[in-house]
Image (tube, rainbow, N blue to C red):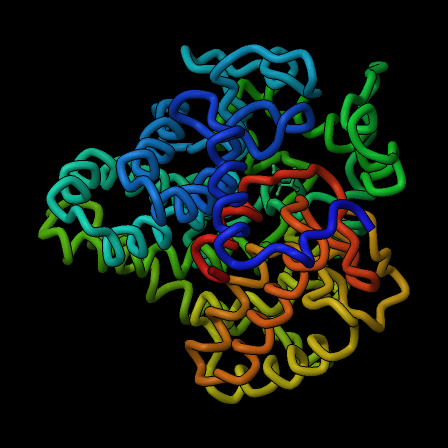
Length: 428
Ligand code: GLC
């Protein structure tokens, strides 16, 4: 097993986690890990800010402020902001082809940031400084949420769509396999760099990369035109993880505006979107699997694979009591079915691969969200169990990007920012 931390006490773990954030700090933004991910990622930045907030509040706010330097005029907050050039990552800014002053990708990522900002505001010691930071951040966060509802749900259904598996943050989840299969493959040669850093058997297959890159090309060819992309994108999924995370974040954003006595003309629109999503979500309830599922809106097919995404409607507070009970039954069985929880694919699935990226391994920020969701619905014992299992993983394996759900072995990048941040915020 890689770099076990079993012998370290709590204080040493806190020190180590803080050191990881400091070492990954490139001046105003924190890279997820050196080499593999040398830029600022959207939901990583949000989760990482939670960790900074435990020992350096101004630095935590700065993480968010720096991320928004990459925001587009239309409100899109990109999934990667390429602040500085690096040769260790592919596809870089040139492949994405976006023409903004601050280079970035052209898709977004799960909008957990407003929820994080609310937690930071509630828990921070320096409220005056927090209010000042939020005065400039809130309009930017609101613009981003409006972008989701406007550009990704132009028909006002209440359910936004994702245009890329990377947008879900759960890049190669088996839930996206069928929808991705229908995407054409890219017609040019390329050299991946991720497999220079990490074993190929932990990373997505080439057949998936060929399609990921086709989509990147597609947005560029559309000149990022919202209408054209919506009408023609060959990958369009009502993604239950994004929908849940967006819903919770919008609720938190509206509440944060109230807490900060911050008036904005779009807050009413956001409130209407909350109501709309709450009434539309029942269309994603899939009775045979007793859970919500994502849906491919191009062919109206369910994304039937049961992955950790289906547990997130609890976090999004989108389930009725009765639905929550069913999801909880599934969750409970999931938590006990593999030695290290929560496997990103259901432990009984024949698609589960314990070490391959989003096809089985455990991700600590997902555990945190699912535990929060369980707690919201009063499933406190389950929430505590998830927290205990998360602490165990940190103890046995340290601060890896993700963990083998059968052996607990640390996988992917080491000294990983969001793992350190979750440890600081939630475990220690
Ligand atoms: C991978 C993950 C994604 C994450 C990024 C940086 O692409 O799938 O969720 O944001 O790495 O950590």
